[in-house]
Length: 244
Image (cartoon, rainbow, N blue to C red; front, side, top):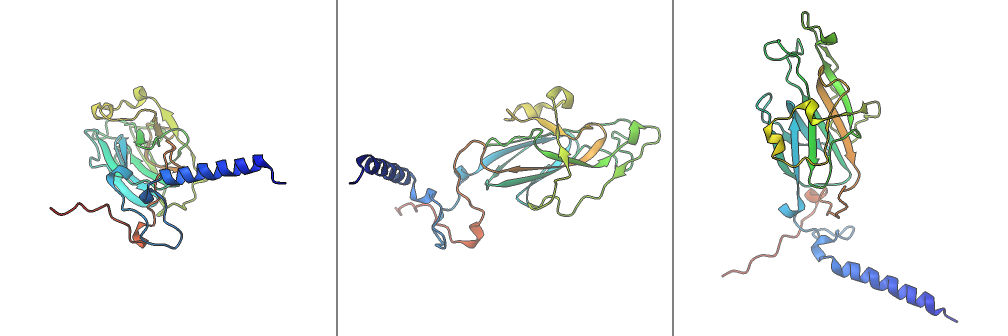
């Protein structure tokens, strides 16, 4: 004899699955394996905003591709905002530099020891914090000696921004407060809520720092289409407007 409660459970599960499938628009579903041309073309609504502020300069890679470069090397301090098309897992790699003479590690005609600071926020909820990896590659003036300043440099690996780069030996980034970094006005005009300023343990002497972080899935939980294979398919375009 068949069990009625098992039949009811099966029907309920089937109905729920069907409703979820119907709720998805055809263009929002991933293409069937091996079937090209079933992925819609990405629209600006598929992108997220990235806000980045560095004291003083940065370059940003995502999944091994250069995405943004600070347009001002020193001052005035500025915020770079760009639209990015996220793909997960997302490997973020950043080179950040505090303005410093390469021989002395000082600034303003070798009269001052500067300080760094980096902060980032993406529209999916990705933020900088102490979970990021960080490593210094240029430090100075050593021992804060401003009378005979010198700098110690470590060669930067060629593939430091690659997805498969091994950063297992790197330490964690250190968080700093706004008061410690002292961001300038453009910072307060952009959304950095929830993000933390980060650097190495020495925000004064470490002048060139690399950061890395992997975002395994969208922090806001929103499902997003994977466009990482876009170059290898023929995507469907948006519906064409009828001719007048």
